[in-house]
Length: 245
Image 1 (cartoon, one colour):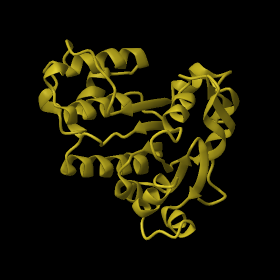
Image 2 (tube, rainbow, N blue to C red):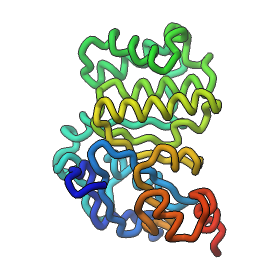
Image 3 (tube, rainbow, N blue to C red):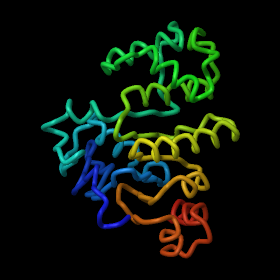
Image 4 (tube, helix red, strand yellow):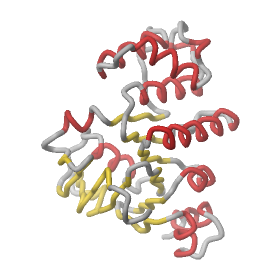
């Protein structure tokens, strides 16, 4: 990224220790305004714990997190009003319909004209035909798209996505990636994105943050990561790292 781009997320010396085990080990990085930053690493690398700390769900053992130039510990409510999150593993109340679920979140977020916003998002994600269906009757792919609608209800400036396309078929996953890129371009949205699909990460990410065993082992454009680890692709690099003893 160019030096003229503003940092929207700043992490310095972030560490999390659980019962003597260091899950995240003194990591530092920045995410820039309008950037898609891919967060990758083998299972147990510390990705989920990092996301939880960025969302204020887990308290760091040490280190600092700043979003929009504000300290997360001191300005949690103000910051989280401008942030949202989606994951393939979120559970929604199964007895409520899709629209009812989204209306609950819209009211929690203080969304103006919630019905209009919900209708627009359902149409955008091509699920406007399931708005009145109970969530328990949805496929995993439909639930994933409902969760993405939820994540965009408050027009966030920063969006954290944890494997958002994991349960989508290739066609819908491709449409979702293109949609996220369009929203990023139109709204200046900054996205921190995790996935085990390395081709997806290469396609989407401006830069890659590669974690292993709680540490940041590389940060840069996909081609820079490949060059550093002498891999022909991001997937080849991932396999090299994951298979190290």
